[in-house]
Image (cartoon, one colour):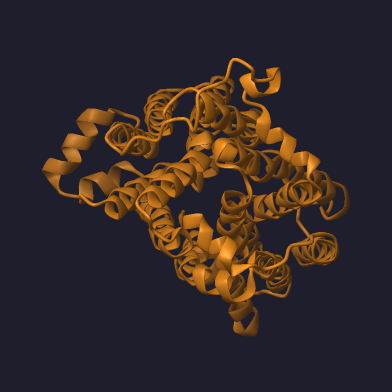
Length: 440
């Protein structure tokens, strides 16, 4: 099996084992388990909490002590085990702690998968900027495939409809917890991915620790020195702000569409009835924009590509603000989901390549971990905490309704301010030769 195919399988499964439960977690807790918001709401913070320290910590370990592919495989196996435990958990507090442990295992694998792919592709003399995006696009396809698979097998009747023998086999395995099959599905493939990773080409730590190394170097904290560089510090800070924007989409997108059901004229509209499928257009658009990244990077440079991403967030939120289930408003909702691919990919994938092209090879796994920490850690927590407070304080009516038009407009203004500040403060000269050097 050639290297690109192996990395494609890794990318597909990396996001399949996340997408199988991420978008349906709220439905599982609130609708199926009947847990209250006070009991279950905290689980949504587990991704952010785990991302604050685990990606950077695991990146340090991969840079200093353990082969990255072995660490990656072990983390996925442990993640799979925690998913099996989640499926059997009936107490929301216990569920929170198990999911937090699971996220501590999973979140570092997002940055490690990038580090492994970059390392192996460069070792094989591929142009990473051109070759990696077509590999990474299969991660998005995996996420979409997981969402649809979970929807098909979301309840007992679906299993029965899937053929008597196959349905009964699943029923025998999963017992009376069929609505928890999303965790079983993800857990099985997480363990398969973990085992598969052990057979990838070796990715040893860049160097042995010298006897004369400083305490910082021995502890693997070298990457944190990047914050001393103005350009890198600004990059990480803006990564946090963009991570907050992503969290706004994850938290409120589907709820926004569902809330149109409270309007008599819209309660039977496609936007309300098929809100999850409408939102999935966002993931589908990712597959197209990921493939466009090499052209945009070589043509415009990393800074301009990141700016395009930020202005795409302005459009994403702005279109939602003016959206409605019918007529031109429906077109704006669809366009908002299409533009999401550019908003998400052009910063996250380009940002990862920026880290790869501007940091020393000895600390690249750690640096990728820092990038993940700022986006999915501090950024996610910032986005969820501040937006939750603002919506509750200023945009919630006495009967519990939400002023969605004003909410999305404020989010759009936030993204516009971030984009303008980034354009002014972040200094980076486009040099195609630097990008080309990523393959060496």
